[in-house]
Amino acid sequence: MSSTDIIRTAIMLLAAYLIGNINPSIIIGKIKGIDIRKEGSGNAGMTNTIRVIGLWAGIIVFIVDVMKAFVAVKIGAAFAGVPGVMAAFAGVVLGHCFPVFFGFKGGKGVAAAFGAALALNWQSALAVLLVAGILFALTRRMSVGSLAAALAYPAFIWHFDRPYFYFAICAAAFLMIMHAANIKRIAKGEEKPLTIGGKKDS
Image 1 (tube, rainbow, N blue to C red):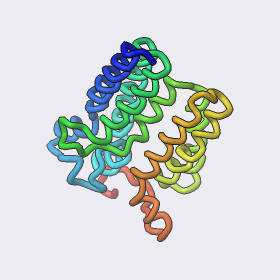
Image 2 (image 1 turned 60 degrees about the vertical axis):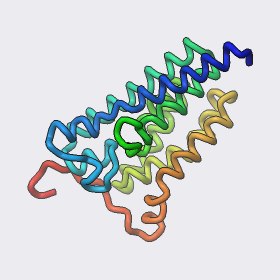
Image 3 (image 1 turned 90 degrees about the vertical axis):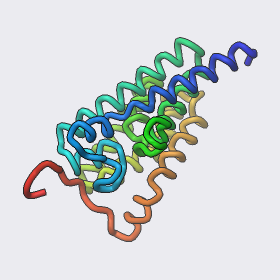
């Protein structure tokens, strides 16, 4: 890489990180008078939003998180090519998980990673979405679907877009680390199924 390429990639990393700071879960929570990071699991992402606020709020969070990451990676591709794609992918997920504007406490990066993966290679992204959907339907535990998707992602990337294989391994490993507490609860049989907030009987 030339010095110009390195600079452009670094700029894209920073820009994607800032885009990742856009956290709809926290914003919707504030509108509702709720600090989502102090309710439920304390995680500022789709699953906790569904549990605390409700299904529609969670759907909005998912769409915004996916779109912000998709746009960031597409910009990265146009601005700095393959290195820009990887920098934007990493930056937007890190910005989502550790947002500087929200005290470095955000979500676990699943929806953002899906949006970034969708921009990188849509076939592999839809394949992991199918895996996540099947595991969630079988277990009603979003974390199980997310972890299964993360584990499957490198295999699908190997098939559809091999140059990103090692990057996909790193992305999957990061998501596994972010779900360390969930893995422990799953192992102990203590992981709770998804419930929908905003209901009297929830």
